[in-house]
Image (cartoon, rainbow, N blue to C red; front, side, top):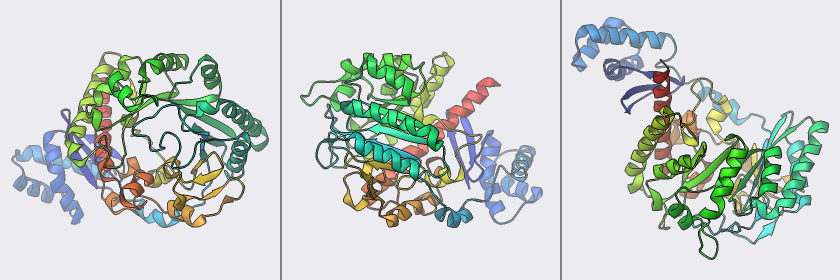
Length: 461
């Protein structure tokens, strides 16, 4: 499978099955579709392909012969027109033995903000306000250790609501997790996601010592952030959190954190929010599209897609310009590994929700991920009984790019791994479908990320 596109002056050719990326001239770019069709028909002969492209394209024959020779060389080298080596692996993939390697601990179903787009309903998750007890959290960590097999590295995200509203339990669970490491030959990697309202020096010091990653929630420009992430009384939260977040990022040496925002229909010009965060000095930035009920006024709509795609192109060029000025930042959705990339299982199934990754409510119930919490159809079990809905686990285990018709022929499938199961369910009522608007944006992000790689490589030459 080949995907070709032009972006920021680069002619980019992706060989989807091998992951090879080629930046080519106009002649090669235009000749590849003709050659691909002939390869599909079993034609590999240089002269036959040259004759075919001469009939189709207005370039001199000598140029076309050189282009076809280059194309055949790439094909012979296994980086163009390659076969899909993954589809035959799917049967074994579905039967694979999985272990639990990560938990999202809902340490607080409560929040001190009233974000307009919050899928957790101000932290309540369709239920009641609650804080996780140390006893429930302890059982969750015990479950993780017991169900992680021989895996050494385990991940735990302290999530909410707002986890700092239950800070003592966070600290106690970190200490308990550390006590399990040596006797069980495990290593915990803790992450804290916070809106920053309660962040202070003591919490920062503890987080810098114990948390492998910090996720700091901010939507960008003051007017955007304050409109979407106010306090319950309606006051904006931007002025209160920004100095704390700047201090936190600097205290971590500008690594091992993300400022994480959400863009909505209120700020379709979201590239300005990314640049605003960069201008504040943040070097690790993630700003992601909202997923919301289409009836909400801030929900993204299909008619917004052209503007959003253009905005990603604008953002990619802007980030390149910053890099050239020595002010480069890492934008999460443009980070892509072209040399190694994820393992086969990750390519096919993504985050591992419902199998390797689980969310835990304050009272100890297991769900496939935080976006399913509160939907009783997806209640997997609890910390006392363990997993009691193996049928649900098997459904999520079978969730992969070949189980989704929309993904099978998509050039981005091995980068997004089929997208988010929760977004698919909320959009179509089926975890093996795909969230169409999200797919359009994901494909553009992949194209932009690869263009940036090409431009940076060009700069080094």
